[in-house]
Length: 115
Length: 113
View 1: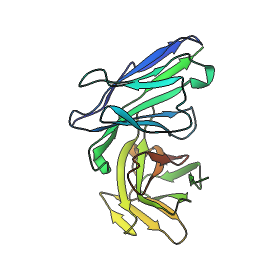
View 2 (view 1 turned 60 degrees about the vertical axis):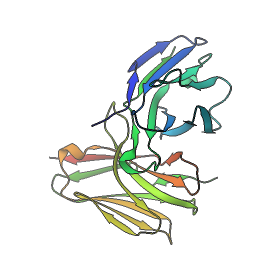
View 3 (view 1 turned 90 degrees about the horizontal axis):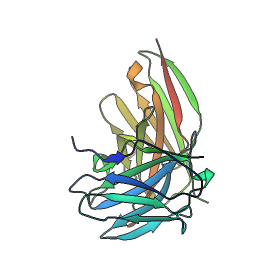
């Protein structure tokens, strides 16, 4: 069964440092997403990406965040200068054109800890 | 603002009993709803979905009910098993071309032996 792969599974970084979270979406999917989940809270939408550009973003996705699809397989989330409150699980997702059901798939997440 | 929320943060059931997890939503424009299961250290896993033009949908051991009048969604799990222990989230997608999902707060389901 195809899956969304995220690396690393856990990242510890010092406040103010830049981090890049990596994702390999499902190969025939067209839409890519980042969500985050602060410990004990609900999953929150950050950004969606289609046709090599951002299609939607939330209020959380400010100038500190950027996304990129540097090649045909990877999708990355960069946080330029991390803050303590950026500590969370970050989930990558990808979807097919319909974006429903099993066609919208989440990865296992990267746990980001900012110290 | 619009939000999706859950009535109960925790639910404990005996193995073999049926479980009912509830969700309230407030965006009347949402046209698609999903239930996800999240096990510890994993991402959300799709369980079942329903479109707004339906009021019930059944899967294997799971049923989702949608009551648009009161903006209420529920997930019923039949013959709950230990492997069903997890956090369950409802999520909604707005109508139109927007593809982001809005998640509720989650219910921790614990299955007792």
